[in-house]
Length: 147
Image (cartoon, rainbow, N blue to C red; front, side, top):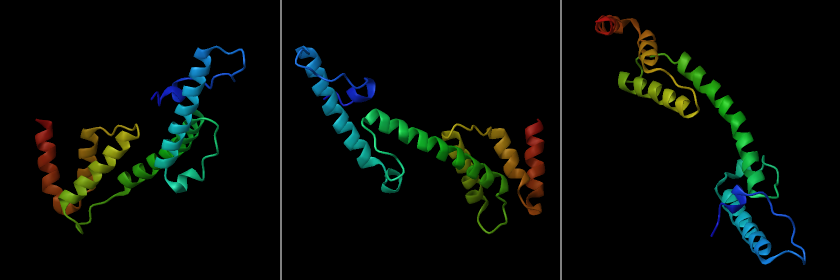
């Protein structure tokens, strides 16, 4: 169905009476591709986001608007996740396992946004934020690490 035709090609020039059959056929295929692609993209974008994206003539322009919108959201989310990662403390109100899983989940979300958190750094960071009762555990880890 050539659904990607409108994304891969610029809008064709308008058809005139002198246009050959190939141009007419391409123009018709491009228009159909653009309408279908645009309809699919509008269907999957959340309603609260749709209202912030201006109307576009082509699916390619619409996709550019969405990309620009989310680029700024990604930067904001990076900052929020980094803040959450660096200020999270273990107070013992939840299990150690849940604390570690939450920290690694934040690191994984940062990685999907393009910020790689080194595993060694993350382990040391988690250990440094533990309460004093985990001091022997920290010492044991540092001893094993140095061997």
